[in-house]
Image 1 (cartoon, helix red, strand yellow):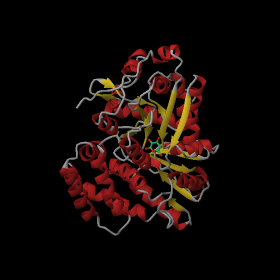
Image 2: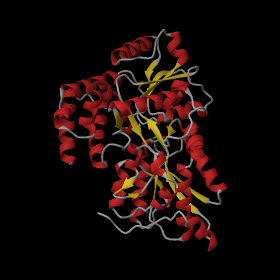
Image 3: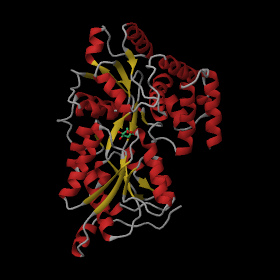
Image 4: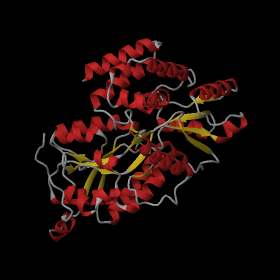
Length: 413
Ligand code: BGC
């Protein structure tokens, strides 16, 4: 349902300037790790350079679950932040609550429709208006490895799950933790969707996690996905529960562990620590076809005050700006959302991401990440993740997990 919306005008800056309103923004985000903090600092700096005053509201917690709880509390209290890191169908869910500002004037003045791929632009629209600004394209289905550890153990990057399992057994026998993992629900879901893409294939993934097709959710292939998760549970160290994702990345960096399955924000950590791709660490897509995308974006919440509305217009303009899209993504590990930013200064992992995104787009296997809130509404993705995490953390059989998965999804509809 369409609600009354604040309109953030592209002219707000100039109009605001005339009445001496200076751009202000309180920005809620969950970018608190080393690489993430370096990335968000780029936006803070650009905002300040353009006369803005930034009030930082970081809410730690990978994947953003804690940030989303903080957001709900603020909106319920009638005190929404000015700008919020928000993505996927959650954008439309908040729009339906009538609390998002309309940033169409900025989007149209800046020609966003001409520089964003249609698939990304679609996530930024609420009915006929622009209601979010995209920052990047993160890929989720990546496997990261310590180059020295693989080399000294005679292991190549795995190209099938069987190869992965064989490599992991060899590493384990050599006293190395095969898989750096943090036991948090969203990290379990991140590994699960990469395994699911590999085993179900792109069509099966789409049927299961976009269409919520019951036959696919209950299929033998889905049993095989849970079997592989059970195998992988045997490859993590005993201290995995509760570990933050960036601490798992650090285990790969220092050679304590060989692999991590994580989105390319992990590359932001490697880079922030001065590590080089191809030398210190390796990147490859997880075994199987397809590309799971996760687009970070910011939505502006309905707020009163010319200074805050000027802040929203300025932020929206900067976020989709060419310079920001380049510098931010060099730090963040992702690639620009804009199609007209040169990747000449980006590394080989970014080039691989960009090439495989284009190939999967034309081959019909470019798919939204369910684990990172791009594919489903919160109730459905939460129902799936609950089953994934309770299976990973118990001795539940794969058959039982599949039955619970189908029942949980059915109940969430
Ligand atoms: C976000 C990334 C973030 C990661 C870890 C993902 O859901 O899209 O920007 O770095 O969570 O916090």
